[in-house]
Amino acid sequence: MLHPISWSFAFPYYAAAFAFGYLLGSIPFGLILTRLAGAGDIREIGSGNIGATNVLRTGRKGIAAVTLVCDILKGLLAVVLAYHFYGQDLAILAALGAFLGHLFPVWLKFRGGKGVAVYIGILLGFAWPAMIAFCAIWLVAAAITRYSSLSGLIASAATPFVLWALDNRQEAQLFVILTVLVWIMHRANIARLIKGTEGKIGK
Image (tube, rainbow, N blue to C red; front, side, top):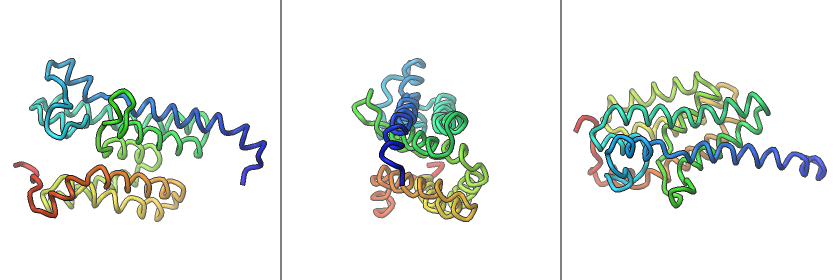
């Protein structure tokens, strides 16, 4: 436990790391890119969120791909920069901030994306073998079920265990939180999966 004096000294750094991550994560690339491309307001299309999956519903595959990359980079940069300058503890706070910033961006009345791309970027920043495992699990699940959302949920559920097995204990604890948030953000998808109305890949 930190001594009260040590905590008062460290708190501004912790707050700054979280704020940095949040501001980086809250950049709405999906909204910015679709508007620049003349595709309108992404929040008025499909699910209304700002992630790459919803951008794809505009029919602009290139913009969706760029959105995906940019959202991954938000998570990756939050981890890499904070880790480089301040170490693991602050990198974890920056990662949490980036994830929450993407889900609940203050600029968009706290209505953002579902977080999978940022989740992957954070995972890449902390433990690239775990990111490879995530993608492999997603691909296998997608090949079997043909559901993108279900594949992401399965892969995210496995991620904390993969990190723990790789001896990334603090990161595993962080990803328990991130995984719970991913599942909460996909509650509508889960409801459709239960009802059998969720769209399959390629349809």
